[in-house]
Image 1 (tube, rainbow, N blue to C red):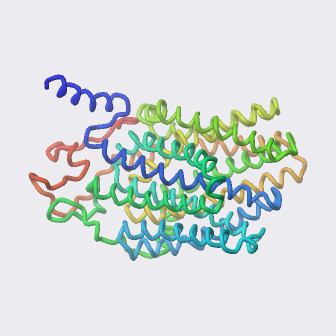
Image 2 (image 1 turned 30 degrees about the vertical axis):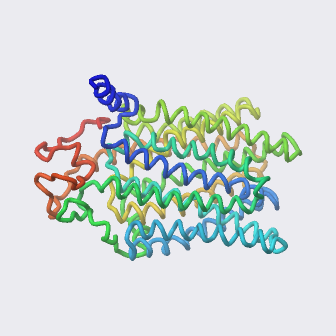
Image 3 (image 1 turned 120 degrees about the horizontal axis):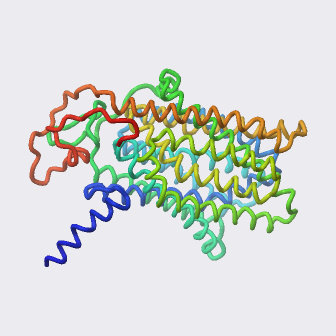
Length: 478
């Protein structure tokens, strides 16, 4: 009996030592990890079909598809903002995911019952649809996490939760390889829809399992739980206005824009070099598959080992500045050596650092903004600004190519951008610290003095005694 109790006590200590998790945080983190696993599995099931359809009319057509995708995301943003204003949180999350599930069913019906109607035009429609779908389902996931967890928690375990997405990104292509022949490609759309429905269930479970942290934008009921029935309200265009009225949100939007511009330049550089290496579609697929495999392995290693420690030890600013520095060094190496192997290393390093370090750090920036900004402003930043960066990067790479400027010309563009990008990351890290340290206005909502029995207590209330007055954190201190 004593040995059992001792092992039970050691387990939370081990989790705290390895992942910096407290006992009451284990459940919400596991649920969020499963949530992200389902989302990324659905995305990676569909990505091969998207890429194959997009390449039907050559690389140049993809540049214009990027432009179409940016226009669609701009048009969809006020519709999403309207949903956020009018519906309860779980309702608009369910409606968003449900819309994409119904769209998948529609594409499945088209491929199954009217395959002769599927051509290049419908393939381009699917490409644009998937690109919008990809951004919105991941944005909704991270917005909910920024709403559920505090800044301290985001720094400690957003990287750990990202492991679920990485495992989903590995599991999705494997599942495609196993199911494509026995079920047929159209049926994969239904499988992806099933994983999205599981993601909705995980969102509901997360909201019910981990009550909201208290704060100025959270209404608390008499029983001590936030009112899930409350709507966020506001205008459908509030997110766009918030981005341009807040220096902090403008900084995040600019960071995302620079990141996607550079990532898209790398993407098209890879396509050009892969096309020059081989004319065989199978050989190209094998090369791209190897890049993806080693990238995912690197991402998983970073998420499990370094990411959380880097953020906690050096702060968000340093974590955000790592990606531009790595990218600049990679382009300089590519200009010096100009080999395909260096390109593979550059892209693998860029994508692994972006997913393994930058993404968790960037999402932690949203833990200190209002609830309306978490869903509306974040939607604008993570969809339209992201796709705008794609368009700018694609057109920049195309113009430089038509001017006859090779990798050396790209270095002259990318390195100055990376320096501005890194400086912006450092500024965002300091701005986030200032927002954490700023005293929050007192909430007039009643808080139970001594909750007891089976009444759940907000997650942070369990770990922070009300009698302890919060002190101003020192730089890089959590």
